[in-house]
Length: 307
Ligand SMILES: Cc1cc2nc3c(=O)[nH]c(=O)nc-3n(C[C@H](O)[C@H](O)[C@H](O)COP(=O)(O)O)c2cc1C
Image (cartoon, rainbow, N blue to C red; front, top):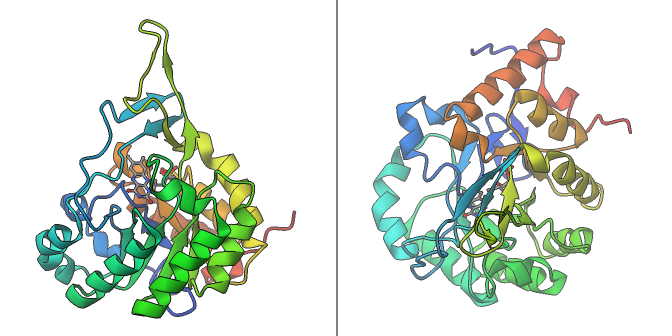
Protein backbone atom coordinates (compact mmCIF):
# COMPACT_ATOMS: atom_id res chain seq x y z
CA UNK A 1 0.00 0.00 0.00
CA UNK A 2 1.43 3.33 -0.94
CA UNK A 3 -1.13 6.10 -1.23
CA UNK A 4 0.78 9.35 -1.50
CA UNK A 5 -2.23 11.40 -0.45
CA UNK A 6 -1.73 10.28 3.18
CA UNK A 7 1.08 12.08 4.98
CA UNK A 8 2.67 9.68 7.46
CA UNK A 9 5.78 11.74 8.15
CA UNK A 10 6.77 12.59 11.70
CA UNK A 11 8.87 15.53 12.75
CA UNK A 12 10.93 14.53 15.76
CA UNK A 13 12.42 18.02 16.18
CA UNK A 14 15.67 17.50 14.31
CA UNK A 15 14.98 14.09 12.83
CA UNK A 16 12.27 13.56 10.26
CA UNK A 17 10.80 10.07 9.83
CA UNK A 18 8.97 8.95 6.69
CA UNK A 19 6.45 7.21 8.93
CA UNK A 20 6.01 6.53 12.66
CA UNK A 21 6.90 2.83 12.76
CA UNK A 22 10.27 1.95 14.27
CA UNK A 23 11.47 -1.38 15.60
CA UNK A 24 12.36 -1.74 19.30
CA UNK A 25 15.85 -2.59 20.44
CA UNK A 26 16.66 -6.26 20.97
CA UNK A 27 13.71 -7.58 18.97
CA UNK A 28 14.88 -6.90 15.41
CA UNK A 29 18.64 -7.54 15.58
CA UNK A 30 20.23 -5.17 13.09
CA UNK A 31 17.35 -5.72 10.65
CA UNK A 32 19.26 -8.07 8.35
CA UNK A 33 17.24 -11.21 9.16
CA UNK A 34 13.96 -9.42 8.48
CA UNK A 35 15.03 -8.31 5.01
CA UNK A 36 14.11 -11.82 3.80
CA UNK A 37 10.49 -11.22 4.82
CA UNK A 38 9.98 -7.67 3.45
CA UNK A 39 11.90 -4.56 2.51
CA UNK A 40 12.69 -3.11 5.95
CA UNK A 41 13.37 0.28 4.34
CA UNK A 42 9.61 0.88 4.22
CA UNK A 43 9.72 1.37 8.01
CA UNK A 44 10.35 4.75 9.61
CA UNK A 45 13.55 3.39 11.07
CA UNK A 46 15.22 0.61 12.98
CA UNK A 47 16.66 0.62 16.46
CA UNK A 48 19.45 -1.91 16.82
CA UNK A 49 20.10 -4.27 19.73
CA UNK A 50 21.83 -2.52 22.62
CA UNK A 51 25.63 -2.55 22.53
CA UNK A 52 28.18 -1.79 25.20
CA UNK A 53 31.83 -0.79 24.86
CA UNK A 54 33.09 -4.26 25.80
CA UNK A 55 31.74 -7.66 24.83
CA UNK A 56 29.07 -9.09 27.13
CA UNK A 57 28.22 -12.79 27.30
CA UNK A 58 24.76 -12.11 28.69
CA UNK A 59 22.85 -13.77 31.51
CA UNK A 60 22.53 -17.39 32.53
CA UNK A 61 19.98 -19.36 30.43
CA UNK A 62 17.06 -19.82 30.14
CA UNK A 63 16.82 -16.21 29.05
CA UNK A 64 13.29 -16.14 27.71
CA UNK A 65 10.02 -17.60 28.92
CA UNK A 66 6.49 -17.19 27.66
CA UNK A 67 3.66 -16.06 29.89
CA UNK A 68 -0.02 -15.97 29.02
CA UNK A 69 0.15 -12.67 27.19
CA UNK A 70 3.75 -11.66 27.18
CA UNK A 71 7.39 -12.65 27.20
CA UNK A 72 9.79 -12.45 30.12
CA UNK A 73 13.37 -11.95 28.97
CA UNK A 74 16.66 -11.65 30.72
CA UNK A 75 19.18 -11.45 27.91
CA UNK A 76 21.65 -9.32 29.83
CA UNK A 77 22.69 -7.16 26.86
CA UNK A 78 24.66 -9.94 25.20
CA UNK A 79 26.68 -8.23 22.47
CA UNK A 80 30.09 -8.45 20.81
CA UNK A 81 31.30 -5.02 22.01
CA UNK A 82 31.18 -1.75 20.09
CA UNK A 83 34.26 -2.20 17.85
CA UNK A 84 33.20 -5.64 16.65
CA UNK A 85 29.57 -4.53 16.22
CA UNK A 86 30.72 -1.69 13.97
CA UNK A 87 33.05 -3.93 11.97
CA UNK A 88 30.47 -6.68 11.52
CA UNK A 89 27.62 -4.39 10.47
CA UNK A 90 29.18 -1.39 8.74
CA UNK A 91 28.53 -2.67 5.25
CA UNK A 92 24.97 -3.75 6.04
CA UNK A 93 24.23 -0.38 7.63
CA UNK A 94 25.52 1.46 4.55
CA UNK A 95 22.74 -0.19 2.52
CA UNK A 96 19.93 0.86 4.87
CA UNK A 97 17.67 3.52 3.40
CA UNK A 98 15.72 4.38 6.50
CA UNK A 99 16.68 5.89 9.83
CA UNK A 100 19.34 3.96 11.68
CA UNK A 101 19.23 4.35 15.44
CA UNK A 102 21.94 2.66 17.50
CA UNK A 103 21.00 1.59 21.02
CA UNK A 104 23.81 1.94 23.54
CA UNK A 105 24.32 1.20 27.21
CA UNK A 106 27.21 1.62 29.60
CA UNK A 107 28.58 0.16 32.80
CA UNK A 108 29.44 3.65 33.94
CA UNK A 109 27.95 7.07 33.18
CA UNK A 110 31.06 7.99 31.20
CA UNK A 111 30.86 4.91 29.01
CA UNK A 112 27.75 6.24 27.26
CA UNK A 113 29.64 9.24 25.87
CA UNK A 114 32.66 7.10 25.03
CA UNK A 115 30.67 4.63 22.99
CA UNK A 116 28.74 7.42 21.22
CA UNK A 117 32.05 9.10 20.33
CA UNK A 118 33.38 5.84 18.91
CA UNK A 119 30.21 5.33 16.87
CA UNK A 120 30.40 8.88 15.55
CA UNK A 121 33.97 8.38 14.44
CA UNK A 122 33.45 5.03 12.73
CA UNK A 123 29.85 4.77 11.55
CA UNK A 124 27.15 6.70 9.74
CA UNK A 125 23.89 6.67 11.65
CA UNK A 126 20.99 8.98 12.47
CA UNK A 127 20.61 8.82 16.24
CA UNK A 128 21.54 6.97 19.37
CA UNK A 129 19.02 5.54 21.80
CA UNK A 130 20.39 5.55 25.33
CA UNK A 131 19.26 2.43 27.13
CA UNK A 132 19.32 3.65 30.71
CA UNK A 133 16.46 1.38 31.59
CA UNK A 134 17.37 -2.26 31.12
CA UNK A 135 16.14 -4.06 34.23
CA UNK A 136 18.45 -7.04 33.84
CA UNK A 137 21.84 -5.62 34.66
CA UNK A 138 22.59 -5.10 38.31
CA UNK A 139 25.44 -2.70 37.79
CA UNK A 140 24.21 -1.31 34.49
CA UNK A 141 21.06 0.42 33.26
CA UNK A 142 18.72 -0.09 36.17
CA UNK A 143 20.32 2.32 38.60
CA UNK A 144 20.91 5.00 35.96
CA UNK A 145 17.32 4.94 34.75
CA UNK A 146 15.90 5.32 38.22
CA UNK A 147 18.09 8.28 39.11
CA UNK A 148 17.19 11.62 37.49
CA UNK A 149 20.63 13.12 38.24
CA UNK A 150 22.44 10.19 36.71
CA UNK A 151 20.31 10.34 33.55
CA UNK A 152 20.94 14.07 33.33
CA UNK A 153 24.72 13.58 33.53
CA UNK A 154 24.68 10.77 30.94
CA UNK A 155 22.67 12.77 28.41
CA UNK A 156 24.66 15.95 28.99
CA UNK A 157 27.97 14.16 28.45
CA UNK A 158 26.77 12.46 25.27
CA UNK A 159 25.43 15.73 23.82
CA UNK A 160 28.51 17.72 24.82
CA UNK A 161 31.02 15.22 23.51
CA UNK A 162 29.30 14.11 20.31
CA UNK A 163 26.33 16.34 19.48
CA UNK A 164 24.49 13.33 18.04
CA UNK A 165 20.69 13.14 18.02
CA UNK A 166 19.77 11.52 21.34
CA UNK A 167 16.69 9.49 22.23
CA UNK A 168 16.63 8.57 25.92
CA UNK A 169 14.76 5.32 26.54
CA UNK A 170 13.20 5.46 29.97
CA UNK A 171 12.62 2.79 32.57
CA UNK A 172 9.02 2.21 33.65
CA UNK A 173 10.23 1.00 37.04
CA UNK A 174 10.47 4.19 39.06
CA UNK A 175 7.98 6.51 40.69
CA UNK A 176 10.31 9.28 39.53
CA UNK A 177 9.62 8.63 35.87
CA UNK A 178 8.36 12.16 35.15
CA UNK A 179 11.39 13.62 36.89
CA UNK A 180 13.75 11.35 34.94
CA UNK A 181 12.02 12.43 31.72
CA UNK A 182 12.43 16.09 32.60
CA UNK A 183 16.08 15.57 33.54
CA UNK A 184 16.77 13.98 30.16
CA UNK A 185 14.96 16.86 28.46
CA UNK A 186 16.84 19.57 30.33
CA UNK A 187 20.16 17.84 29.58
CA UNK A 188 19.45 18.14 25.86
CA UNK A 189 17.87 14.83 24.90
CA UNK A 190 16.17 15.39 21.54
CA UNK A 191 13.46 12.84 22.22
CA UNK A 192 12.40 10.18 24.70
CA UNK A 193 11.24 6.60 24.24
CA UNK A 194 8.86 5.08 26.76
CA UNK A 195 9.15 2.49 27.92
CA UNK A 196 11.24 -0.60 28.46
CA UNK A 197 10.15 -3.98 29.90
CA UNK A 198 8.56 -4.27 33.34
CA UNK A 199 10.34 -6.40 35.98
CA UNK A 200 8.70 -9.82 36.29
CA UNK A 201 9.10 -13.39 37.53
CA UNK A 202 7.62 -16.78 36.53
CA UNK A 203 7.57 -19.71 38.96
CA UNK A 204 7.69 -23.36 37.85
CA UNK A 205 5.58 -25.41 40.31
CA UNK A 206 7.36 -28.65 39.34
CA UNK A 207 10.85 -27.45 40.16
CA UNK A 208 10.02 -24.60 42.55
CA UNK A 209 12.46 -22.56 40.49
CA UNK A 210 12.15 -19.52 38.31
CA UNK A 211 11.69 -20.15 34.58
CA UNK A 212 14.42 -17.53 34.04
CA UNK A 213 18.06 -18.35 34.75
CA UNK A 214 18.66 -14.93 36.22
CA UNK A 215 15.54 -15.49 38.41
CA UNK A 216 13.86 -12.26 37.30
CA UNK A 217 13.52 -10.63 33.91
CA UNK A 218 11.56 -8.00 32.04
CA UNK A 219 7.99 -8.51 30.83
CA UNK A 220 6.99 -7.32 27.35
CA UNK A 221 4.17 -7.91 24.87
CA UNK A 222 0.39 -7.39 25.07
CA UNK A 223 0.37 -7.91 28.87
CA UNK A 224 2.17 -4.61 29.46
CA UNK A 225 0.29 -2.32 27.07
CA UNK A 226 -2.17 -0.68 29.48
CA UNK A 227 0.55 -0.13 32.09
CA UNK A 228 3.06 1.16 29.54
CA UNK A 229 0.44 3.49 28.11
CA UNK A 230 -0.29 4.98 31.53
CA UNK A 231 3.41 5.61 32.11
CA UNK A 232 3.73 6.97 28.58
CA UNK A 233 0.74 9.28 29.25
CA UNK A 234 2.41 10.62 32.40
CA UNK A 235 5.67 11.25 30.56
CA UNK A 236 4.17 12.88 27.49
CA UNK A 237 2.36 15.39 29.66
CA UNK A 238 5.54 16.24 31.58
CA UNK A 239 7.85 17.24 28.68
CA UNK A 240 7.89 19.28 25.47
CA UNK A 241 10.19 17.04 23.43
CA UNK A 242 8.81 14.21 21.25
CA UNK A 243 8.13 10.91 22.99
CA UNK A 244 8.18 7.57 21.18
CA UNK A 245 5.61 5.06 22.48
CA UNK A 246 6.70 1.49 23.27
CA UNK A 247 5.07 -1.43 25.01
CA UNK A 248 2.71 -4.18 23.91
CA UNK A 249 2.07 -2.96 20.39
CA UNK A 250 1.02 -5.83 18.12
CA UNK A 251 -1.63 -4.21 15.89
CA UNK A 252 -2.12 -0.90 14.10
CA UNK A 253 -4.82 -0.06 16.63
CA UNK A 254 -2.35 -0.50 19.50
CA UNK A 255 0.06 1.87 17.73
CA UNK A 256 -2.71 4.39 17.05
CA UNK A 257 -3.65 4.39 20.73
CA UNK A 258 -0.14 5.62 21.57
CA UNK A 259 -0.28 8.19 18.76
CA UNK A 260 -3.64 9.50 19.99
CA UNK A 261 -2.07 9.77 23.47
CA UNK A 262 0.63 11.93 21.87
CA UNK A 263 3.35 9.59 20.61
CA UNK A 264 5.59 11.15 17.97
CA UNK A 265 6.32 7.62 16.72
CA UNK A 266 6.11 4.05 18.02
CA UNK A 267 8.53 1.16 18.44
CA UNK A 268 7.42 -2.41 17.84
CA UNK A 269 9.11 -4.99 20.06
CA UNK A 270 8.02 -8.54 20.95
CA UNK A 271 5.50 -8.69 18.09
CA UNK A 272 8.44 -8.91 15.65
CA UNK A 273 9.52 -12.10 17.39
CA UNK A 274 6.30 -14.03 16.85
CA UNK A 275 5.27 -12.36 13.60
CA UNK A 276 8.18 -11.22 11.43
CA UNK A 277 5.78 -9.11 9.36
CA UNK A 278 4.37 -7.29 12.40
CA UNK A 279 6.04 -3.90 11.91
CA UNK A 280 5.11 -3.74 8.22
CA UNK A 281 1.52 -4.85 8.94
CA UNK A 282 1.21 -2.18 11.64
CA UNK A 283 2.47 0.46 9.22
CA UNK A 284 -0.03 -0.63 6.55
CA UNK A 285 -2.80 -0.72 9.15
CA UNK A 286 -2.10 2.84 10.30
CA UNK A 287 -2.29 4.07 6.72
CA UNK A 288 -5.52 2.12 6.16
CA UNK A 289 -7.09 3.59 9.31
CA UNK A 290 -6.23 7.14 8.27
CA UNK A 291 -7.58 6.57 4.77
CA UNK A 292 -10.81 4.94 5.95
CA UNK A 293 -11.46 7.74 8.39
CA UNK A 294 -10.69 10.45 5.82
CA UNK A 295 -7.61 11.81 7.56
CA UNK A 296 -4.91 13.24 5.33
CA UNK A 297 -2.07 13.04 7.84
CA UNK A 298 -0.96 11.50 11.08
CA UNK A 299 -0.86 14.95 12.69
CA UNK A 300 -4.66 15.02 12.59
CA UNK A 301 -4.86 12.28 15.22
CA UNK A 302 -1.58 12.75 17.11
CA UNK A 303 -2.19 13.86 20.70
CA UNK A 304 -5.94 14.23 20.18
CA UNK A 305 -6.75 12.18 23.29
CA UNK A 306 -9.67 13.84 25.03
CA UNK A 307 -9.56 12.11 28.39
C1 LIG B 1 14.08 -10.50 23.78
C2 LIG B 1 14.11 -9.04 24.07
C3 LIG B 1 15.32 -8.36 24.08
C4 LIG B 1 15.36 -6.99 24.35
N1 LIG B 1 16.56 -6.34 24.33
C5 LIG B 1 16.58 -4.99 24.54
C6 LIG B 1 17.81 -4.29 24.42
O1 LIG B 1 18.86 -4.85 24.11
N2 LIG B 1 17.77 -2.95 24.65
C7 LIG B 1 16.62 -2.27 24.97
O2 LIG B 1 16.65 -1.04 25.14
N3 LIG B 1 15.44 -2.92 25.06
C8 LIG B 1 15.40 -4.27 24.85
N4 LIG B 1 14.21 -4.92 24.92
C9 LIG B 1 12.98 -4.17 25.26
C10 LIG B 1 12.21 -3.75 23.99
O3 LIG B 1 12.97 -2.91 23.18
C11 LIG B 1 10.91 -3.03 24.38
O4 LIG B 1 11.20 -1.84 25.08
C12 LIG B 1 10.02 -3.90 25.26
O5 LIG B 1 10.05 -5.24 24.84
C13 LIG B 1 8.56 -3.41 25.28
O6 LIG B 1 7.99 -3.45 23.99
P1 LIG B 1 7.08 -4.69 23.46
O7 LIG B 1 6.04 -4.92 24.51
O8 LIG B 1 6.53 -4.21 22.16
O9 LIG B 1 7.99 -5.85 23.32
C14 LIG B 1 14.14 -6.30 24.64
C15 LIG B 1 12.92 -6.99 24.63
C16 LIG B 1 12.89 -8.34 24.34
C17 LIG B 1 11.55 -9.05 24.31
